[in-house]
Image (cartoon, rainbow, N blue to C red; front, side, top):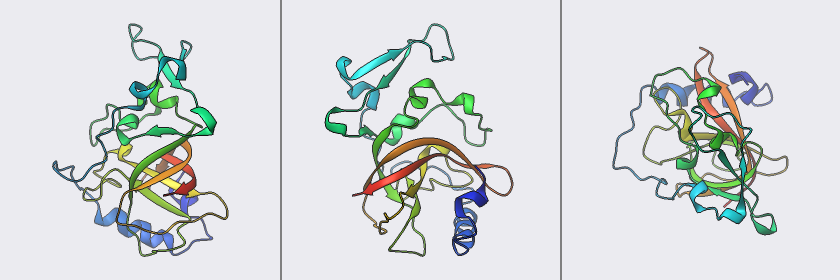
Length: 200
């Protein structure tokens, strides 16, 4: 996926907005001590053995590693509860991203219905948002150059669905995707996206 396909010709006002956000956030660090939604324990550790299945055919970085644990949908079609810690992996800031860096435990969430809490990245539009960036923290730069790629998710709401901006944390439910979003310079801006069903 490239930068233009996110905003398309149908939304000419979003392209300048997006570019201004990237410019403003250029070079932001990751200071400690800010509000964060990273206190949840990882999803894999919250699953009971009866709620998970072992998948030995998935590739692992080291043959001595245990097979990846793929969570099943919870009872009654409830989504898998995730935190941003569940989709974090080893990647130094400024290092180039390659899909192979994503471990099988995160790849296992691809195409699964999940719910994750975060903050809507502010934009000029307050209501009727059909797409937005969900970020880990409300006081850190979590999107664009200088930010960790796993600290943001590009959310595109399903047709006929929208949400409004809030300064409070929100819980987004939808289908989790691993989708690379690159800027005009070819650098990665995001690697995760969601087909949004609901924002609470």
